[in-house]
Length: 387
Image (cartoon, rainbow, N blue to C red):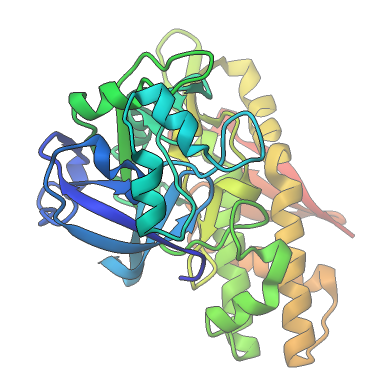
């Protein structure tokens, strides 16, 4: 883990909703709420201790040491909804004087400035993104994340890998009432919570991280210990395997409704390039689960929905693949034919995939896309490589 440090204060929080897959785990150390120093005067709860995190995008933080190991992959504690440094309607830092006026808490600026050199950050009550407050997280969005996390396996939905939400931590009503005074135009009406998640790294594809495949792939090779051509190819295979599962999420979650329609998960206002992270082995884990939407389509619309979901993220997927491949060639001086290599990696990556299999027809490599229901009449083909 790498990034800018962020110190958060830990407070025990008994009001939590735990993911059913993690109820047999000892989660006593996770039943917390995490507040920045600038919000410590908002609560009279006793601070358990300070914990040094790393900033993760606008309103998140991740701890630098592994919290749990699941199927040989280390996962790190990630908290979504720890406040933002930036004012919601400018590129300026939060104004402590303005926060004092909004909350009625006097002396906030003086006490914080005396004790801290880092910029202040706040969870606010300003309505943002329909279901969340600016700098925080709303119960509506967190509940969607929890439903996805409980849908199938702990970290996988039929091959689609995700970073699980292990717990929703609801902020105490007395704290929430103060936070909701911090708004500029529209007050957030719902419960304010924090998502306690597990992520395999904070490396993203292109945006929302200091480490991205698109921005500094060489540093990521070093970070993940990719020091041989064999490791680079294995990284690529895992990237492609999980990437194709990402591109075909709808058919991996397909359900028959008994009335001529089918339902499954689709992406809403979330994207591969900023809302997924990479594990050290190259596997893509989708992170922002609140952006998955359960949709319903007619049977004759399924093929179009499958194509539409693939095209939605295909460029980001191929862009990242190309950056990894170029770095592999440069480092290990093993230049290969681009199309031959990609075809072989796709075939290797899909050996054990129960939904998608490769098929060569003429001069085109297709993805034959089945479904979790095993319905033969719903199978479609998508061209992934042309010769």
